[in-house]
Length: 392
Image 1 (cartoon, one colour):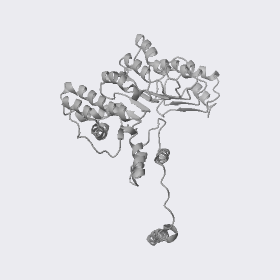
Image 2: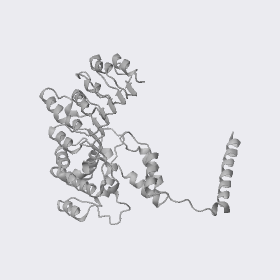
Image 3: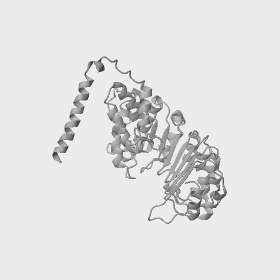
Image 4: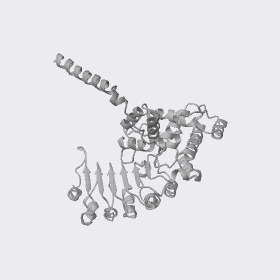
């Protein structure tokens, strides 16, 4: 067995040496070098090779591959760098709700972007006693120009981590807000078109900062082109924010609503303003194509009743880890006849009255209905399973 291994290894080495010998021959050396690819085409090739989720965010494995591409030559380095910095504060799907460990990994990115601030921004922060890195006079690239995806909650958490030990408690919110504002100004000045935004304060209470920054006309040019929006976390304490979101984001084709803890127990009068103000985010869109609801409970009925406003454009509808308790019949879904894909992933408390409107509705473009439940969950509603079987 050992001899076999040595023989196999020897064959490989021999083939490799023959390859190099042939490569050095005149018939290879006399040929002209292959022309370099145009950087835009090279970047597109790299992008096609990366594994992305449905919101277009590359996987961590793809990031590692891009790092290797940067070592080939200057042209490859520039093309790969533009992709690596499209989403600088990326939220890894493997992270838990404990975000402090994650924030440390993004602090260096905050420090890098702070070193690129102009002299006026630096002076504003230094006057407040905020320590910032020395200016980077010769950066390798204009990194803010590459940013297309912004996880605002991760950026804020990273800023908080940096200054949590260097200022008094009553100054922390002000410092974080000032630094966040400076970074947004940097992105607004250099970034082309922001395509995707994740709006979630995470474990910290920064509602007022979100209101002021999202409502500020100074950043309307940065936020208005956004096509993908994720609303999650501790948002939802005040209807004012929902109105701001509806006024700011009107060009969405992807909207994800995930786990709004403050909205879970809304009942009576509270649910009435939620129906009007929160649902206005869906109503005001010009062409919403994908709607994803994750870990939602208590307010699904309000959202489903608003879906018909996007009946002509909505193609994908997903419910993941949702609790449908108290939800009315799904007449809103019945009217969305252009749907091509519907998913019910680990959802509970689905009843036959909810599903009944779907059984008679025509869905000529519907190609796939996915239903899934964990072993420890109650069985899926039989009526839903029967209807889903029509679209295997």
